[in-house]
Picture: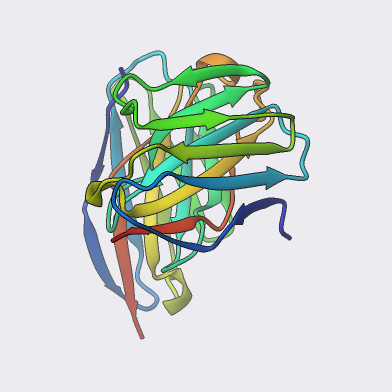
Length: 114
Length: 114
């Protein structure tokens, strides 16, 4: 089955710096790669996702890149702010519906210092 | 924006005493998922329903069961909770169609086992 590795497990940056979180996946058939943000005690919320037919996607300060050949994808946060502090999870899945389910990485705890 | 509702928010049960967690959705989504999340770990998929079609993960213990009596409701039954079952249980939904894989999470039920 699919296995998702995520690094680093913790990341501390100064406000205004960039943060990069990297994930690798094992199943070359995976075609959907979302990123979830989970603040302490709250539900995970989707912040950005990318499909295998796209190499890069950007939404304001957040961007995701995908390298299908190497089977890795990354989350980039620019101009970090204290409210970006949270745990970020990457995930991968093959198909939607009855055959599909998301496999999550172990998470990265991001701390943004004012 | 309570589209996926989990009750109760906190649940305390005794070792070996059956417990049921509930989830309801107002999104009319086809797929409902149950995830287990232990402290500082990624959400782990237990099982999911695509409509009435039940899909169990291979490593989900028999102690965990689920019911989906209709589109809106899904229940997680833990037949004989052990201390190791203390965790946050997250319900999530998705449309289940290709191009609509986004998961919508509930706020979770924090289960304590005494």
